Image (tube, rainbow, N blue to C red):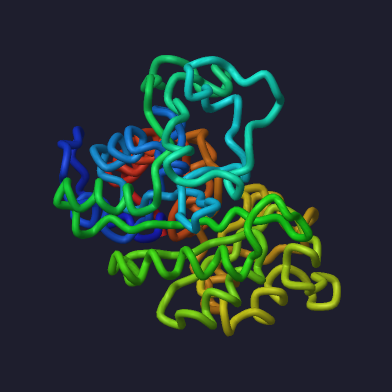
Length: 324
């Protein structure tokens, strides 16, 4: 078995804060999912700072758009009661909070999104630590954090969180335009990949800004998500990607497509996606043995809630002999 891209790795046993990610893990993309949500509150500056200190190569995050057109970092189209407390520090009485599109940035900053753990069974404490009082950040806040730390190499994987046919968010065209405008004004276009499950968002992004890299997320085969395209009519997932080659640069499937894809998705091999021009970065992989399996298949990176585990796996592989 050949472990691709790892022969040149010589990783230290410990990571110091502010170390350049590209120097630590050359050639393999370690993406901190929602800012390492297994270690800190998801999509918060505390979580992103924790991921940066580990030496990740990419910060993965989700965004929405407010009533006043600001781009904020959040997975859901509403303030999630499992993640945030009200401005008075109380739990929400309803199952979901107000929509982001109905709030302005000042109102959104008032919620405490660091005191709660949404699933202590899935994200045990430790290693996860809450951060009481942590607000929901804007996308600009994330870029400011990175600049303040002097990190000039870490990349960003920004997900447009939209749902086909839903009016819970601002219209998709306005959503994508707001994100692209932030990337332009913050001069972060070349360091950012824009990803989406709703592939129409990727087409809109490329129309607005051809320089922006895009990644097609995939959880299920449904034309509503895949820009109206039917996998059966295109010979499976690889055929879908070839059909959108004009506006998709990379492929980010759920890890099961790569390990169980032939039966469930009419999926191709990692090598076949790459040969067609699509780097492969699966999500969300938290178990070390699964990480090893995917690395052995030749993936270009991994999105994980626990980037510390992935770094440890890579360290182990770098120190192990390889076989042809």
